[in-house]
Image (cartoon, rainbow, N blue to C red):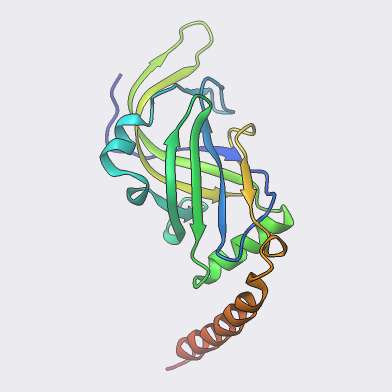
Length: 190
């Protein structure tokens, strides 16, 4: 079956180990051959055509599937035998990305979710499972509630793992506070 014209989402949990001073994290956005809570199974190779066509830079990194809230960029996306491996960098000049980073470090934000258009699917008559053989990957979001609990972010580096980062982090926090104050002042203009 071929579908066109609408966006679907699939979510996967992330496990936060650490976040570096640049907001870099990585893990699996989707796992192959595992039914999610919606009864969909992403098959090996489902991302190949899309990644070849648009690459990591063509896939948006969003907050909760909100197209009005990009929070960073994907550094790399690749398929391996387990699933879709993703490495992203939060844009810490964006307030929502700083919030996401704090929530990830706390363990309160623990989901990844793909936004896609299915291109080729089959449905199993007995189980009702929908097998997704090919899709157009549009975005991957950090989300609160995942559909695929097994997929996890494996690394989010901590500043304590990067001793040289402490001074630059303090400089960054000072600059971020200044930017926030400036933006707040602009918002209050008549």
